[in-house]
Length: 120
Length: 109
Image (cartoon, rainbow over all chains, first blue to last red; front, side, top):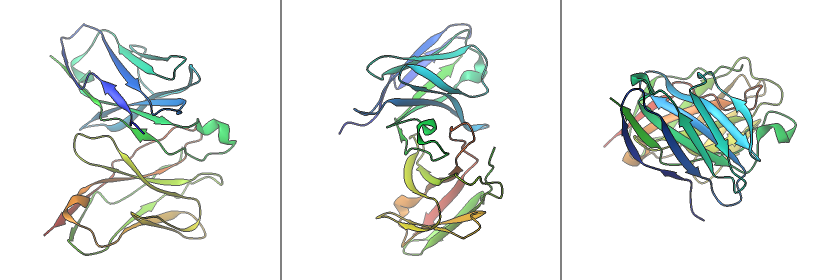
């Protein structure tokens, strides 16, 4: 079974530009989550999508947005890039969304290799 | 929001057993405990998940005491390739994963 794929793998952008990152989940997985990883802040949750609906959102400004398509593929967009947006952006897919379990079990998440974004 | 505390780093030698203890004093009744492993420039990889007592798979064991306020990840007979960052997570009330700083495990020859 193919794993989670993310494109592009590396990206260099200039401050003020906008960027779109893409994530293809494992076949059959309906939930996609996005994370930002930086040396200073570690792994931080951005948002989660399930069945084309955003189910959860982390504490990031409105410049960060995302969407999910009917085939479960997801994109995230960052507008008006800042130097501090330089990071590794990780996408993770899972079968379902924790809220479906009726409790607080965390579905096993499968992470992609990430997109390394550098803002200059 | 359940918060976890784990050691920042641990050193070990090949062939030894490594035990990483994570504290989660505010874990909720329905929260599961999950451990991930991350190598440099790669996404985290699921290792093991448990709710209570002991869980074992081909990679590791997870020990959870009755009060569930802590858990211990046990890596048997580590090798150099087990050098990585290990994250302990508990369920968030909003069903999203919250990664802490993790434990950097360094295995030496």
